[in-house]
Amino acid sequence: MMLRTAFTRRSQRSTMEMGGTRFMSSPSWWNKVEPAPKDPILGVSEAFLADPSPDKVNVGVGAYRDDNGKPVVLECVREAEKRIAGHKNMEYLPMGGSANMIEESLKLAYGEDSSMIKDERIAAIQSLSGTGACRIFADFQKRFSPDSHVYIPVPTWSNHHNIWRDANVPQRTYHYYHPESRGLHFAAMIDDIKNAPNGSFFLLHACAHNPTGVDPTEEQWREISYQCKVKGHFPFFDMAYQGFASGDPEKDAKSIRIFLEDGHLIGCSQSYAKNMGLYGQRVGCLSVLCEDEKQAAAVKSQLQQLARPMYSNPPVHGAHIVSTILSDPDLKKLWLKEVKGMADRIIGMRTQLQENLEKLGSPLPWEHITKQIGMFCYSGLTPEQVDRLTSEYHIYLTRNGRISMAGVTSGNVAYLANAIHKVTTAA
Image (cartoon, rainbow, N blue to C red; front, side, top):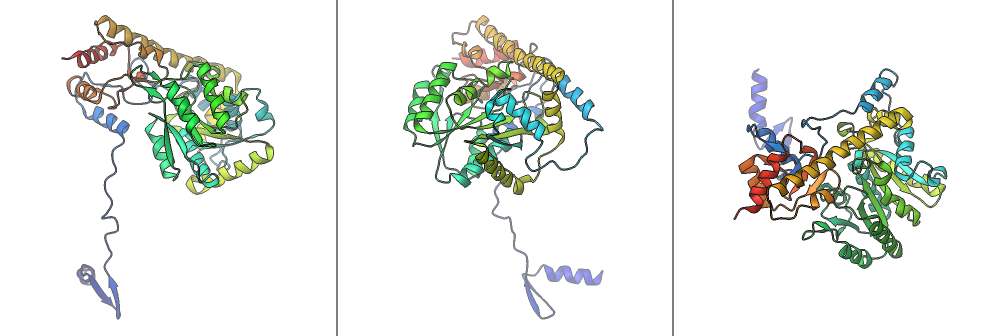
């Protein structure tokens, strides 16, 4: 004890001597680290949980809820878990991930009978959901096209900016949302595509644009594809909501299919968080369509090399769930039924919210609620109006006015509509 006390006293000095050697005391390594800003979406959930009000409503979280406001585990997922229980080991997957999951993912994105899959022109790896797919591609872009920019829509999912920033890819933006019409700013978007330097990278939301819920029409997608082709741009699709937007995975992949028909080489990020409810499993797929089989093999090897120092191998359980569902005709049929049920509930809540606002005699137009699609509604509420919703009515959402329609239920839609009416018509 005496020796330890003596050592403690000596270690508190700025310098000390031991055996004739002088040691400096340890510096404060992290004294310059400032607290990181709170994530705007996660901050909403934290504030909601801390609110004791029985009337509180959370329409900020980007996760599906049933009509009772509860999380959902799909029946197809429960059945898949039963089938794989005890039949799968816990060994590492290859660096590229589950071959079966990747094959089924490519069929979902590129088409069941895609010649590109048969010709092995697609380099693909399993990813840590959509975020991981975007990040690996951003690093791939930086490594093999270091002088290129990525064009990101205004607005977009906030994490897109973080991903390409941390990959050190320079960013530019292009027009997308038109606040006055609460729709697509199509003419300005096309101008930005035309004016971007040849061979730029464009980040596109395949369906159910986050956060606006505004998607181009099929005709508009064809024009976007044409202009990108003229300029030699590389389109990268983030497809986080296939099947969840309209209830039909084929319809939700139409934008990608149009670009494929026009002969583009594309990149694609897929996620099974929303459309299978596998939020915590982090299951996704990154794919890059190449010119031929040889190029695809080279690209895949580089994607794997990028993944290696990040996480080495992707997780196994969620990949087995996805491949079991998509490769079994009965389970896939059940999934298609369930994902349509989720989409239909969201569409129904949009209709009810609009109808309730109109019944209250709101002088404002609310057609955009049902014209937009997917999990989110870009309401047009101002930050100040959002603040009032929270302080006066205990309704929680991000300050850009994005409403998660998954948080709207038949039990709270009238309350939500009344609160929106009050804050938007106040003198």
